[in-house]
Image (cartoon, rainbow, N blue to C red; front, side, top):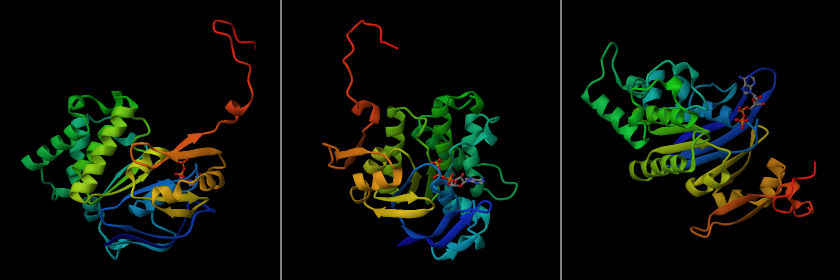
Length: 276
Ligand SMILES: Nc1ncnc2c1ncn2[C@@H]1O[C@H](COP(=O)(O)OP(=O)(O)OP(=O)(O)O)[C@@H](O)[C@H]1O
């Protein structure tokens, strides 16, 4: 079933169009990755999909309904967004921040109930943030903050979770734990996940489908093995890479080919000071 449908979407912040006539569908239960170089329009596209930005031309529909006609609170019960950064929440404690995820489910002037606290706790357990509960968000490391924002989004119990570079600050253990959690929610509970990432290798491991952006348009879309090719990467990222297969699962795996390491070099003797 098509959950989100973008029809001929264009967007500009000022005079320049940064998204151009873009159309795509996202199916219910999909794990979609949006990749592409800096400035290609990934974050803008994610914000358009989630209703944070309104397209200048074209339309975004959620289950066939124009999202401009869906009240904000109803939209927040369906969609949660984890941004690259959320500085407006820095003066809150971790547990307060995660509990805020329940706001779209509360009536006007209604306080949180037992169930809201239980869901908040579950989200903190799942993201490994329970031990941080009474800390100020402002005092946490970049990776800890990220995990708190993901916990808040999960507490929202959305049908669609948007994540913008959400594992960028995370070490390998925590990045894998978060992606495994998202994959489990996606597989077991039908959560639709849409991520923007620069980590193409991780995207290849977890995403069902990739959408490769280039200069405000969709350059290519399809399964990771169809999209992650040396030719596509060379054209879109203007970078030389080599691509082989992950021996565990056969999925594409990129290695950079830095120019500096292709140059012939004299071996440096151990203990010798480098010649400057
Ligand atoms: N608030 C804004 N006002 C004006 N221009 C903006 C604004 N936000 C983004 N842009 C421009 O829109 C274009 C697309 O930006 P966007 O953030 O969507 O790209 P991106 O692919 O997510 O980039 P990155 O990988 O660097 O995060 C860029 O040229 C950027 O400079």
